[in-house]
Image (cartoon, rainbow, N blue to C red; front, side, top):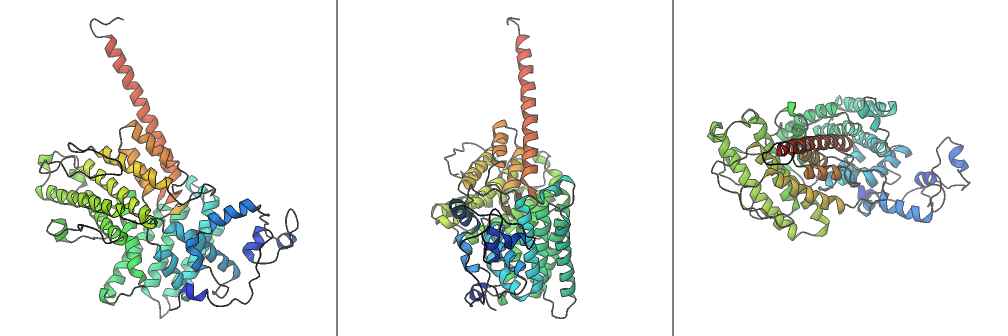
Length: 500
């Protein structure tokens, strides 16, 4: 199977170098007549002329729109499809692929899916549609869907066309399960981009069924380095956990990633030290799946006194807490010796682990043994002399989230915030606002929800909706605090010996 990077080495028949002219002609790779204010070549064909950038803006555009990491994936002219499709695929490589793989291993989005798209038209057409939707998302054309309005008709038509193409493909004799699984994941992204969370959840559940079928039919010993199913499995496992957090009615995650020996504590999930960031991502995914399933299954007893909680539940809760402690220590060691290019990935793992630890503490405030847990050192020194308050862990996670967003590679010149799939940053901010009773913590969450580098959408979570919810919570807490201050003031005046 030829890779996309190999295809780029083939000579192109006609690719005129366009160094000057309007932006539209540059994208189309045609010579511009450079008429002002709009070139005739664009206007005569009914196209919109994007004008002529200044030298400074051209440099900014090059820096923002064309990351160095995608230079090896420039789409050649010999890629099947129309010129418009090739332009959208090129845009996918320059923009969408990087956002979809934010803070994670980019192999799935920058290599494996692109390789399949060259040989499978149904995947290529889905990628073209994804690129078009991503463009519309950044331009704000899809934001109206959250206001009970339908997306643009052409958007719905593109999505419907992809569904028809997949149905035709599945009716053919040589249909491959991994192609159907890849398209199903792309359909999930379609619905997440336009904000249709319920339809996205349906595609996710279908994808999980297809994944289990693919894993059952294939042997792990026969897996290849370029096996796309293993990468899709990691992504779907993450989305499975997120979906159960987003929609409580969905119940526990569909996948079970831990074994009975791990949940009972006879086998440790977390090693003494991580070999690399990939191992730490895989271990955290198992812990997130475990915590989410444990909390959903035992949701009915979360508010009961400690004495009324079954011993086996308390035992499992103690085991998963110990594993989270081990993880935080191990990932901190990995962070200290990591290279700069993976430091942000590791920092995101620390943030997610702290959030899940805080959730566990809130649901089960005490350990079965009554002993204080080990001290987990955050970025800034934190002395734990007694059992930690859950909000302390949330505050630490928010502090590290601020560091991560400030260090993001997004340029301030970029007008639109990106779309991501699995960072859990937006959902983490919403959780911090909902579970915190401290006004300063909610204020921090609100400030981060407005951060220019925070994703505008992260899978099912919308940043604007999250910001609105946190703002309402902050107003409620402020009102309650003001009312409490007034009650305290009145009661003080009524005390004997006080001046009225």
